[in-house]
Length: 279
Image (cartoon, rainbow, N blue to C red; front, side, top):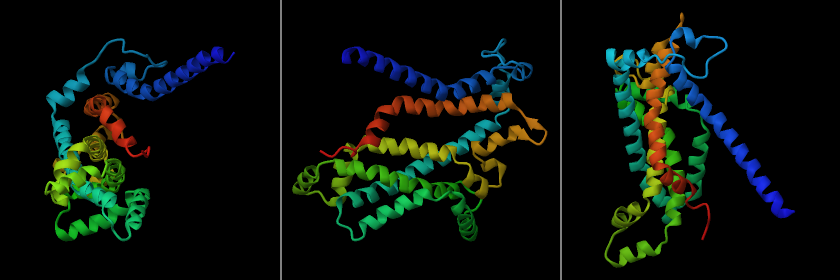
């Protein structure tokens, strides 16, 4: 009886998993399909599940004839890469220090990072705007990178610290015996072994910088410096929304993100679960 129930349970769970996956993937499918429809078919009732006649004009108009979107994408790429690099450079030594060194008030630091994660970005937007205006960084990409890093840094530290705790201390002890200093042991031994955790933080902080909307909105007024999240709003006006163009650009924007997750999912899974089980 128990043996007969087990295949039924597996079948039900598999069906439920496929249903949940379909629900999550359907919006992406609908964006792709909508980007290939003409305006008449896009507003057709009832809607068509696949375009009756594929229309490539939104892609040609936005990526061949008019290259403003490519400029916005380049700005987003600079912001995302800057956020990723700055987060890694700052978070790795901080997380290592919190994992290995005997620091007074270590738990207070960890609690601070946890609490900061709860604050909405809107609470930081106005103070950062005032500060960057006074030091002359307003309306610049470095200002946006620094602002987003205030959100990504606590996250990066909390992800990397358990991974450093997961590594055996014997590795550092052996390095100290060979004459390494604490910094050289961290740079030559610990960081190479922490590649899954570093890749996880790199990808997730890159995506945070790529998709952030609030900080560029509050810190950038020059159209030539706007990232893609603000550039998408050129398709939305008081007279209506250019859904074809908006969907086409959204598809192209999502391709790098999807590819990054496909090729780095192994690192992300191991990086996020590191330290979850204590040996």
